Image (tube, rainbow, N blue to C red; front, side, top):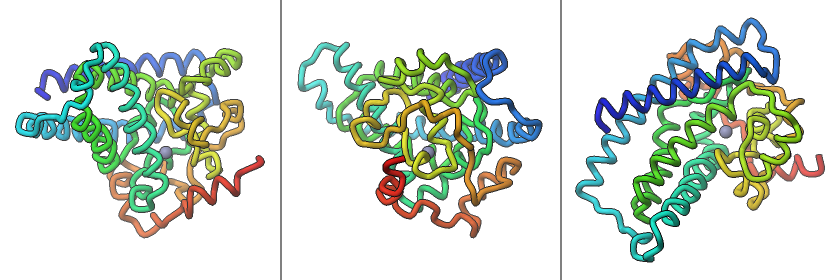
Length: 277
Ligand SMILES: [Zn+2]
């Protein structure tokens, strides 16, 4: 990725975040308490770190792609290009959006890093890229493997990244959606209400609604919680109180602190414990 492409990407994402922030002002879901403003600096610091991490990883991948040609399974099937693009977007949405995310909740070593994102006690557009650079690398692996194995067309990669960035900002946005519209959209699409449940302190809700674009993976794999529960969600993590006020360096070192013990004993057990609610 050239410096020009990097700056274009950053400009697009910051523009989407600015639009999301305007919608938050016009249609807020929850009233932001005064302390919520104090976390934005650290969140935006991690956002900048995410941009740089992605740039470095994309540059390494581009260099590797020149010597390692994709296996091109999709090309061998001879499907029309539009179908390759649609399949590529759906595969990447599953791999990067759902599978990489669910594994971070299930594997304690990765949860240490992903809990930085969940430690935000308020959720708005600045939470979107409150992610640790190790998480960025983890998600990148889940993109690069299917791209290489299937030979996913570049157009699919660009469209999926754009959709992922846009919906990532919207779903974290403190945005109130008209309930009937939310009910219809959430049949197939991850709305702000669907994702807000994922930021709940209640682990039976935290361990659900992993998807980024389509809700079908959560629905098919038994990890879907209806979006109607969003209004009662309490954000954050019980044993990470105070991390909302942490500085950017504090969030980067958070996974290495002794308090970062395993909090999610077993995803499956948690679901069973939460069953019937
Ligand atoms: Zn998560």
